[in-house]
Each structure stands twice: as C-alpha cells, then as structure tokens.
Image 1 (cartoon, rainbow, N blue to C red):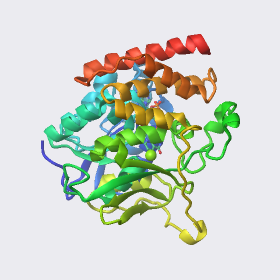
Image 2: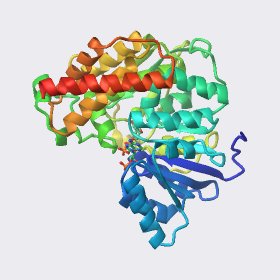
Image 3: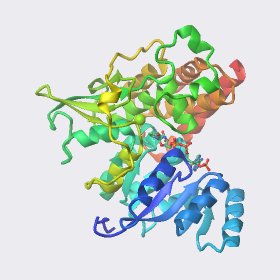
Image 4: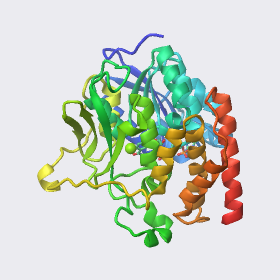
Amino acid sequence: MSKPTLETVQNVAILGATGTIGIQTLDVISQHPERFKVFALTANNNVKSMFSLCSEHSPRYAVMLQPQAAAELGAQLKAAQSSTIVLHGEQALIDVAAHAEVDTVMAAIVGAAGLHPAMAAAKAGKRILLANKETLVMAGSLFMRAVEESGATLLPIDSEHNAIFQVMPHQRAKSLAEAGIKRVLLTASGGPFRNATLDDMRSVTRAQALNHPNWVMGPKITIDSATMMNKGLEVIEAHWLFNAAANQIDVVVHPQSVIHSMVEYNDGSVLAQLGNPDMRTPIAYGLGFPDRLQSGVNSLDLIKIGRLDFCAPDFSRFPCLRLAYDALNAGGTAPAILNAANEIAVEAFLAERIGFMDIPLMIESVLTASVIEDVVSIEQLATVDAKARRAASLWLENHA
Ligand code: NDP
Ligand code: MG
C-alpha cells in the first residue's frame, strides 16, 4: 500500500458525507482543490443531500446504505448525466473505505454502524481521520491493533482528541509516562443543562436537549453532549488513542469551549490547544497533517470572549459520565454494551418515549444485567451489540 504523500493529490472517501462532519469536511476540501479529490461519498438514506453533494463534487462512487435510496439517487444522477457510480449496502461502504485508490478516509458515520467501514480502512492501511468515536468505544483494542499491523495513519478528529494529539509529541511513545505526560484533561462544555437542577433535568424536552450552546452537531451526539455521555465516550476514546489509564484522564467543565483539551507534563507544564468551536479546525488538521491548511475558521477573539471558566463535572446530575468510567474500568465488552444501550436510549428519548433521566437508568440496567467478556473478535462484538440492544429494547417495553 503506497502511502499518500502531500505532493500528490489525495483521493478522499467520506463516510457519512451528508452529516455535519461530512459536510464540513467537504467545505475544507473545497478550499484546497489542488490537494484533494473526492473519490467516494457515503450516506444512509438522504438522497436529496447526496444528490446535491454528488453534483458539486463529482465523486467516482456514491454509496447509500439503503437500496431504495441508492436506486433513487442513481436515477437522479443518470438524468443529470453524472458519471458517479452508485452502490448500496454495508459491503459497498466497506469496499470504498478499503479501495486501492483511496488514500484518506474520513470516518464520520454516526454510531455503531461506523465500525465495520472504519475497521476496513484500518486494515487497508489508510490515512484515517476518525470522527466516529463509537469505533474506539466498541472495538478499541481490535481497531488499534489493525492500525498498528497495517501501518495506517490514525488522526483523531474529535476536537478534544485532536487537541491532545496536537500538544503531544508525535513520535509515538509506548505510554504516557514514556512521553513525560502525567495526565490528559478533556474539556467539556457541560451542554445545555450545565446549570440545571436535577428536578429540571427530569422534565427536559427533546427540543431543549437538542439545543447545544456551542457546537452544531448531528442529533445523536447532541443528546450525548446533553447527558455528558459524549464526554464519557471520549474518556474511553482517549484511553485507546493515547494509551491512557482511566485515572490519567480527567474531565474539566469549560463552558466557553475555547480550550479543546490539555495535556499535563511531569514538569508541571500544561499544554492546551485553543480555537473557536468549529470542527473545520480539527478536520483541516487531519486533512493536512503535518501541514497546516486554511480551514475557513475565524480568528479567535480572546478579548471578546473575555474569560475562560472551569469547574468539576457533577457526576450525580450526569450519571452517564460515571457509567462510562465504570465501563472503562470494567474493560472487555463493557464499553460496547454501554454504547449499544446508549444508542437505543438516545433513539427512545428522541422519539419521546422516555424522559431525559431515563437514559442513564436504562444504560445502567443493561450493563448490570450483562456478562462482561474479553474482546476477541469483531464478530463477537456484533453479537454483544445485538444482545445489549435487545436488553435495552426490553427495558423500554417495561418502562416506556
Ligand atoms: P450526523 O447525524 O450529522 O451524520 C451522520 C452520517 O452518517 C450521515 O451521513 C448519515 O447518512 C450517516 N449514517 C447514519 N446512519 C448510518 C448507517 N446505519 N450506515 C451508514 N451511514 C449512516 O452525525 P455527525 O456528523 O454529527 O457525527 C458523525 C460522527 O462524528 C459521530 O460518531 C459523532 O460522534 C462524531 N463526531 C461529531 C462531531 C460533530 O461536531 N458533529 C464532533 C466530534 C465527533 P444520512 O444523512 O443518509 O442519514
Ligand atoms: Mg468531542
């Protein structure tokens, strides 16, 4: 597998192209036509958005998960005399992620559905821009091993992990200790309910939970941010990316979302990466690495921002954060079970079937009733994931 060199045009596959990360990736790519060619775009079933992205970027392949959506897209593109080839199904997602002509894969499908294509990119030795944190939560050991064995380049896109990556030494140390690092500090905005009382939180609506103060994101991660499960998933993500133990990963609530995360070195130095809360910065960093590219993000105006605040996370109002630390400490399949139960809980909350504070209750109940195993294979994880989803659905039938 030839490595992409930055002198040549990189062929990019964007998995989850119609999502908020996908669209922002295309925005950055459009600013650098001399460096990037859009080779493949994928989505689930949003034909309208995919048609307009294909018209604008003329990828070689467009993949829809749903066959009906692919048929509609194919007909529309044919009528528009486009030469884009339309494929469908999970295997096609995997095939474009591992395609011999692809250099860079942006893994930005939401949820567990992103695991297999991201894994295929890792096994094929691609340069992987990883936004789909669920891949590491579910299958961190297998994914990191695949990256290692194939010689893939892994660049974290989640803003916190991208920040940590930026302030860490890049010659890969085997451990934080070897790199002279004491701990990593993940910043968290605290979401829309940072100052809400537990009573208020029991009755929050879908619309209130979807109203994130700082970031524009897809619905699933927006609800995860409101429960702080997002930060919990990020703790697990940091564990795998940086080989950090749970007690070396601290969460600091920082409402302005200007410091995207920090690393504390043994000598007491704390290095932070700052910027406006705009995902085009980490995306441009991943696309250009080791070069720095224009991203279209405005300059940070610290005088206008005026102050940066910090406080400790409240584990009693945000039990999802504690559940994620517990799952990380339990190890094995516990984080995959946590992730599956969370996906069902978030769907149920978005469908207005359960209340906001039922989300952690459901997850805890599924975790408590599950047997935790060592992670051995991706097939085993599929079974574990399905079983946890069934347990969560059962909980829902009994409680919703
Ligand atoms: P969105 O919901 O905005 O987009 C999700 C994308 O995935 C869409 O293209 C969607 O297609 C596609 N998709 C959904 N379900 C499936 C499926 N079953 N199979 C294949 N494709 C599917 O999500 P975001 O862009 O917000 O997030 C993407 C990932 O990036 C998540 O893992 C999230 O945690 C992570 N992330 C996002 C950040 C953000 O700022 N948004 C920040 C950090 C991480 P369709 O449109 O057809 O439904
Ligand atoms: Mg994040």
